[in-house]
Amino acid sequence: MVRLVLVLGDQLSRDVAALKAADRTRDVVVMSEVMGEGTSVPHHPQKIALILTAMRKFATGLQADGWQVAYSRLDDPDNSQTLSGELLRRAVETGAMSVLATRPGEWRVIGDLEALPLPVTILPDDRFLCPEAEFAAWAEGRKALRMEFFYRDMRRKTGLMMEGERPAGGQWNFDHDNRKPAKADLLRSRPLRFAPDAVTEEVLALVEARFAHFGKARPFHWATDRAGALAALDDFVTNRLARFGDEQDAILQGEAFLSHAVISPYLNLGLLGPMEVCRAAEAAWRGGRVPINAAEGFIRQVIGWREFVRGIWALQGPDYTSRNVLGHSRALPALYWGQPTRMACMAAAVAQTRDLAYAHHIQRLMVTGNFALLAGVDPAHVHEWYLSVYIDAFEWVEAPNTVGMSQFADGGVVGSKPYVSSGAYIDRMSDHCGTCHYQVKDKVGDRACPFNLLYWDFLMRHRPRFEGNPRMAQMYRTWDRMEAGHKARVLDEAAGLLRRLDAGDGP
Image (cartoon, rainbow, N blue to C red; front, side, top):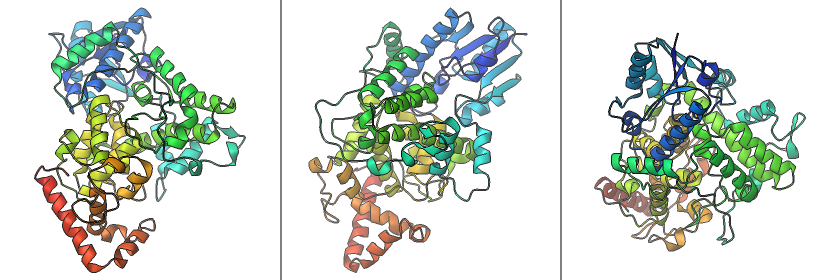
């Protein structure tokens, strides 16, 4: 009996569970480019182009290996433009009576599959190193879920950077050696750029014609197949990994990538696997080519944080993206969609996002995320924006990072405190403040940094919740020592700033 084998655009691996369980002599692989997925949120044009191009090349490779592939192009006149519709169309064409799928990374898609009028077998996505059931067992009974302890267990499980039962170098992480401000360096290596080939150009033209979304489709320099992804990984390990730890939290004007890997799109599409990228970093350290703090810091991002947030997503369930424990309700300010702003850090982060579909984690967390949290933006709007605009954003990884870590909308499931700061942090870690209209040293007045005003406003709005948090108590003591007239002026000017935001007049 013929089965349909669904392969999604972020499951482009020969090792994906559905393909491993399928029979290439009888089963039909179904891959579909559909408007329903391209417009579920207004995805960045480069994100859509990367996924569609990589899908086409992956399908061609499957066909060359003897698989029968029913592939729906976006501009196919018979395309129903939904995943469910295309599965039903292919079932009629082939006579298939069932569907075999790998567990999707979005609850909406899981629900669509479960609602099909066909038997659907959904297999666990075993490309992750920690199965959902294993994470649930680890989480059971814990008062708090903290990545550091999960990460240590993952080090033991994988054996990465271990010396017997002990971590290499005698400690689990080397954060005290990391996270320094960066300096301009004309010799800094940039990530590999891949010139669009004929397949990519065809897709880019299609995307430009069909999607009028925020973001520029060109220039497009992403790898679109496994060979390119492997080349990008090798380039990172050879040329930038050594400085990764030092610069991972730094922000520099005109330096979108610094020493970051920029391989998360390839990991999240399935073109690279987590163990192969970690082994490459470990080998560079064991070979004496990179320092231990760089290799450990990178590996922690993959087997620690990446696996941890995926476990949180699976454990918390479909309602996670609607969490809003702080009761924030402000609309997303227009500056997130490119309205001019005099805030140098926000202008740079949004422009870079528009042009590249990329910003590194500190730009996301401590600039755009920090501002949204301080301003009281509805976390559902922030979640949708991040899911829309970043090339590596898929719900399983984006939602815990946004709803949990960035916006604290889950009440502390992901983090023990909200990630909020005044302008001082941005000044310390970036060079934006020196060219900004606002003065980071000014606490009040027309030139006061908006982060300074909104920081104290946020703390006061949520004092009952956070003043007992040991990691935040010092900030409340600092506020209490301020002169009463100064405190009143801070809150008054913060209220005025928020009114201007509500009126569409960005700072």
